[in-house]
Length: 160
Length: 123
Image (cartoon, rainbow over all chains, first blue to last red; front, top):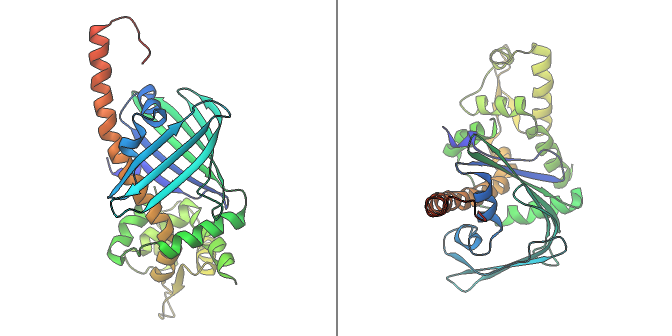
């Protein structure tokens, strides 16, 4: 199965980014891996060289979460937010803030199970078109160029 | 057009699956409107409408051949518009691969727990 069938990143509206991925595991395990601070730092790490020394999750409506990532070169990255809705093993809604210079997003993660496989759908909702544009611009400045020979692969993955 | 307006036009253009499929086709070489319409169950006017949106967003342009008016991908513009998304995609791809590994482990643990304790536990 090409990965594009089970992994998609799309921009359905001018305020949203949606990530979809299918996992070969039952829903309660995917939910556990996603919401248990014992497991999250094992996988939500981003590029090579980063670890997640702080992972605090008070998983209930109104509870806060706080993540810190550290690179081997000493650089640190921090994110905070608050849980708005928690419905195991189906759905978690939380706010996410990277600091005062970044727009706060509302993140919704939905888990659905079919034939032993679980689809996770992550929706990031920006407060406004302007906020999303600001995030896009900042991201672009730091972004790495996609080489032309990879373009075709990328396009076909987008087209699924 | 400000750069923010340009981004809007580009992302609006990319939001449609037919237009993404057209871009995917053009990534392998320029093509006439007729050639582009072929794989889709769509009239040429309908395809032309999609092409206009892509053209306005600067994602495609017209070739020199006056008869065929082939469309071609403006790769530079496309890369500019999507590099952020690509970076984001790569970030998640790495995370999800690690999550796959963890889930395999959790499935094994789950199985062992069930073997030991046939009565349902918290997992």
